Image 1 (cartoon, rainbow, N blue to C red):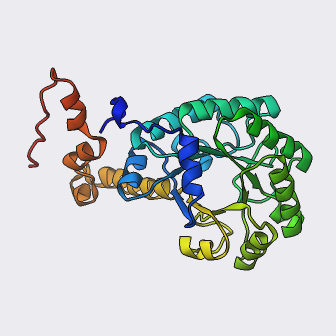
Image 2: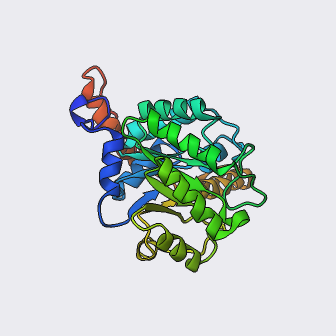
Image 3: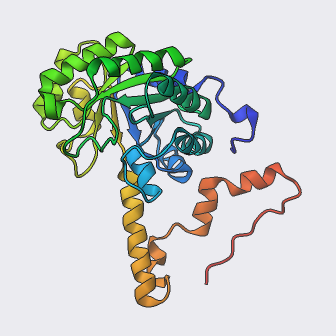
Length: 303
């Protein structure tokens, strides 16, 4: 039912619900959802938590993932995804939008918007996608101070520290940073852009008892693995950050090319979500039923 009905809203905070999912023995699968519609579709497919990627979010806005957007812009996406799906959401917090006080403001803003978890990375601005080259790393102790600030600001949000150090400081450097971040208060660690299965395995062995997140992004440096394969390597969470946007963008590209070629959309009709399917996903009739002044919509019969 719509999020407007208080009885349908979760009684526990998003942070508590995310933490409960993370504490289960099986790996937590978090597909990326770049907007509210995608969030509903992921929930309807059976997922219990979601991920909001900075790369997908910025790409949907038509700009690159270079740390350009603001806390308020991200909070807008958090609110629509949390409202639409009702699921606990892990959010990409980039570098925290500044130093300690900025990180604390980010945590408070994201938690109030409905996020259950956030990850913070040890890059310097302008930050880059973790699978790209020449990333500039922050001093490890400066990053640890940000993690400590995030932990101090949250009520019960899960704080995940991401390290991009494997590419420049090697696996040992990434492990040393990860241990420092756990000491600073991180609930989990996200080792980004590991390039071999052995690296994933060795990182997990070096971090016993620590919750770990694996990033299964397409077209990156990480070899393709399934959720169960990551679980066997010792990982507690896996994300597919940009997958929903990649599929949607490819379909839209085909649509616009078809319209330009044919002067219409008829050839694309079999690949479209129908009007009825759209209304079912967003719960149009449920919203109409809440307001007796709205006559129930009759879906037109297709020509």
